[in-house]
Image (cartoon, rainbow, N blue to C red; front, side, top):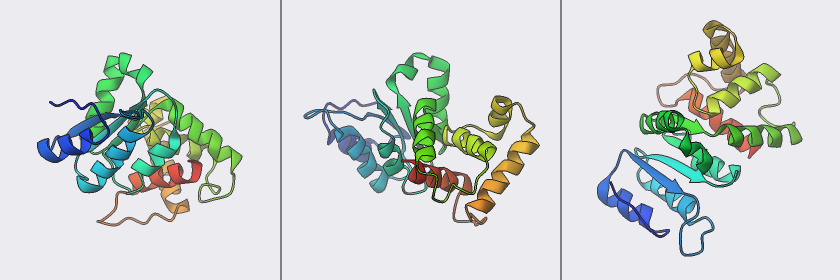
Length: 191
């Protein structure tokens, strides 16, 4: 375990320790603007196997889009106020460390609001329910969790996800994870 106190710190620690997961505050010294997230994005480029969980005081969805721009999993963006919910925080840590995503519900909601302000784009073909499913996917939820949240069957969720993949033109390949690519498309279109 290591702790840093400046913007370049995450790069040094991740490069030296090769952790499974890095938890990075968006704002680090010396300017307390975006040093942490910039370092996380650079670290992600240099060490794509390291899970990165960003913590922020405010909703800044543009950073989420930048962090997810590679189309890889193992990333998360949570509001600091969520850290107090220990089971949810630990769930997010496990998902990100395992290569999944964990996006704060408020970040996803803001992305959805941004999306509704700009109805054109790759997501315009999705139904309202498919938007809901994609939003829950962006939070890092499993199909079973999505089914519980929407009070539908897991089969219905699978059908919605299949429709999302089709409408976003995400064909199955051995090289890409379509679920992550769908979330990246969502974030680009809404961020």
